[in-house]
Image (cartoon, rainbow, N blue to C red; front, side, top):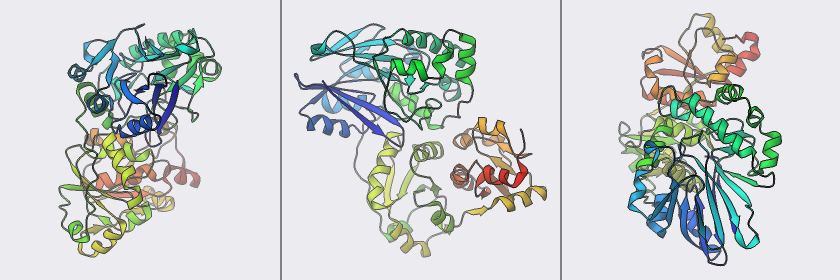
Length: 471
């Protein structure tokens, strides 16, 4: 058996390529949309991808199962549990099998058994992996978003991301029952989750890529509550961060059908083409360091920090029908392009290099981003400025806040515009905990017509001045 982990640091997403070296067949579990990575990896080991499977309908990236079915003729294995609302309707056009609890399938000398583990989602499956030439016992578990290293998948997303009111407690109870089933499994089984630290699909995920049932039994905080359903439900639902807005769109597309992918790089724009961009129609996503963006950026540009911040912010502030241009260093262009297509932002009209921007800036409409330090922030508060927006998570806000501030998490702004102060020319002071999330929010608020001002150092810097308040 050949086993390979393919990991996306920005989305903290793990896919698994598992192959039978005797039959030269391979399967990919939980693939992302740009499947050329898996195809190349399989080919490098003399394998061909003949199957693909999902643990559940994902919310944080677009699935590559359909793309593998189209390009490789891969047979698709999906959950048939969870009810008709969570059946993947797109798969009817391809060779597929909808699995029920306990069903198994084989690939050469490999055997996989599907186990229904609802809670994170109603249809969720995990898969036992058995290398039959080595013996009848399973080697490990593809746990998807059910069991992570040190955490369990969050059961609130159907309510918080999809708007299905009143469902999260029932999902948490289902998760409790699934967790009890997990604890009945042998300690030696390896645990291969779909996400690691930094994912919004759970809280307090570990950075170690894999674990065992026995280790999770000893160290996974959520599993310690199994046996007391009420305490489990209370613990698993508390402290969950607000999900990015694009999760709802991912969930719907992954259920109904991901558009075919055309992975071709957009053109690199010249200075003249940069100057000709219609900035009312094209959103420029600027990946330069914040200080450079703050000093000068194109009108209506969106700034994003790198890493996990990028898909969370861009996915929450840019709509899929909007045309975008990427301002990016040439050697980073493919990385950001792939991140965008993994969350369904395909209308990329061009790339702008920092050098080209510098050359074109004198003939383009450019702006500065306003920013003040914590001392000036306190002065504004003392002067009676009540136009303060806190874009931290709910748990951070509950631990302490600036008196009179409005609170909306930075990835949920577009959903809660009616809760924001009215648009006018007065400064809107925007802060998070350290100044990064508020900087990204500032660029979106500016597009809405606000006069936003970022607080450098955020709430932490203000609290260090001795002004920390309890909510």
